Image (spheres, rainbow, N blue to C red):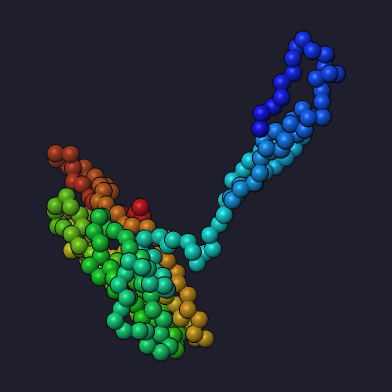
Length: 217
């Protein structure tokens, strides 16, 4: 819409006409902001502001973090050939890496009986290189029928590393009434690192004691 112009050499009372006023009104109407999808308009005496409406996804639609226990099969995990048995709940472990390695059994599922009180704990077992810079050589996830932590090989902090280390990923609980719940240990891919935890005095700078640390990334 073209806005009408006034001549500086013509008296104003002769320039103001109903036609020009209607053109001003139409131009103002066309310039009016309208709310769109995902936006909100707030009109005040100081002007009009436009804001974006942040929509929260329902919990069921939220993308789970890597290496977490889920009760719905992710699309990237092939469907098992058999269906879960009666009074059984099936769980999966979401895709995630351990020092850049994918678990050898990443596409496996876990069937948990729901007819009686029980617990199933999922642990990541990472196999370590004795001396090489590549700390982790391969990994897999294992299941235990209680919450007792599996034993790791003893390590004094010097010499070759232990053969493997366990990291807790979470547990599935079934109550006496058959209610099923999942407790995940945070979530995220794993990074296992080696660091010097202490230095004992001695010749040539002393003796270094090392430890292993696990972080989520």
